Image (cartoon, rainbow, N blue to C red; front, side):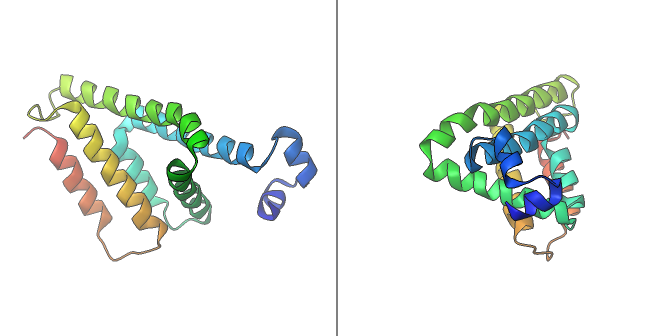
Length: 157
């Protein structure tokens, strides 16, 4: 909360005037992140999100984003109420990803031998792993080349 007060210039009381508690504040921050992600997925696909994330990994503001994503993952496992509330947001990302993949398939650039749901699941697993990897601060892998491999895996040859 102290960092939020410093970043916004608002007092704790002013912040909680708009949010009933820390959970509501967290949900608002995480929801804003996921709304931005859904827009990027619709425009450039999940690989585009991963490319943006990789490019911004060393920026200070991205560290907070990683923390948010890891906290979302923790709460999904441990907090049924949060998981239920979050399910709609997660489905919006999944739907944007499926629509993007279906569009790519219609354009003839996406492989046709694998079901869209499987391709979407594959990309989601890669995204989740990349998020965890980048959150640790490790830099021992060539992420751009790996993402090109991921893109090649879903493209028609």
